[in-house]
Length: 492
Image (cartoon, rainbow, N blue to C red; front, top):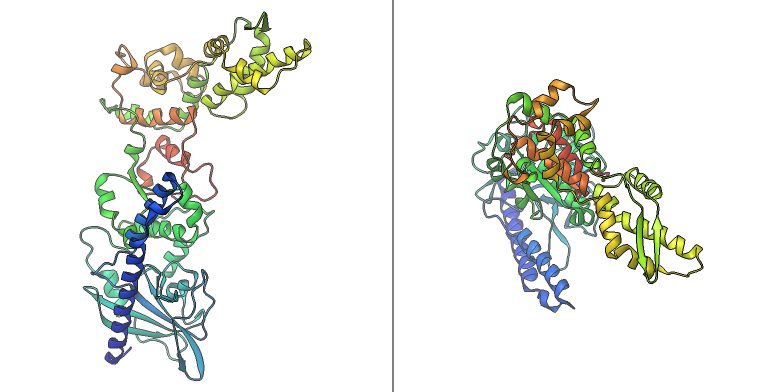
């Protein structure tokens, strides 16, 4: 245990660190985004600077660091930091590093506080007497109202066993949790740290009883990934999905406290809010609509909107007319429907593919058309009208409205997937006159979201934290997976 004489130097170090953080923030605030070369660059720079300033805010209710590591020798530090300080003890040179919520550097660019997510900080959470990871001493700080009030040292190389557990750690873990959720960076346990720092390519499912820290671990993992893979996740984004607005309010302070202000928050319901909920399904209906089999039913219903061509395509150009027979058009349509692309992407390809078939006929007749001619053919009125008759534009609400209103359409789409009784459960007793008058349920919104994704690919995200995943239906979970299924780094 450290003596009280150690308190004043540590308090002085904290004050100096706070001054350095203030200097960093004032430096960021002084930068002028309008000096960028153009308006778009200035706008992006302004957003970046605003995030930077927000991440450098000091919280007077806590400290910039909560721990300190004394190494046998200064470890290699990624991202360029050099030794903060060094001291002699027993003839050995030690690297002394303060671990906190964010990186703080002095005027010379040397690190004063290391971010808890930096590789060297791993030792603060995982070093032990059996595996000290080069650490001689681990120091924890007791904090009250933003001031250091106690110090507790753990000598990892001592011959004798420690007499008890860390009192500071126990007090912090057992501190009453009221109001918004707080970060747990000072109390992350070794098994939690393994989850937080799991590889970016790893999907993580955290299970445990209520109050065991599942949500906190997920949020800290998001913060660690943003730190470690910042360039990648800045482009693709990070989303936290919670069960309700109250939950999002409860956790909203955690990531900003860790210096991360670029994370989006949403409820599962808000992600699929494609219409207004005006109806409540029966339990049987809601369960069936949440079944993963509905994805196949919707896929069939959507692609059945593609019509078989019954007439040849005729494109006039100059004094000639170019004709593509219906069977050849069907071959092109069949190829597009089996390419594995989204419905609208294939629809956009159709006129260009048909225009290419026209160009081949032009070339065989002795003409020498170029790409401009092909583009002109693809965009001409007869081509647009013909393509739309074969592959019409589709509205997700119309597809779902027709399924619940028309027994024949539902039977065609659900054949071999849902039995007759299940199909009857889904049909409306009294269909509305139009999709605009339809009374959608919460489960319907999830199915509409599935249709939107079948039409055009859902924008992907780099990382998603999904809380209370066990409460989601299979269909809703598919919607969350659609945000990630193009990525190697997944987290739920």
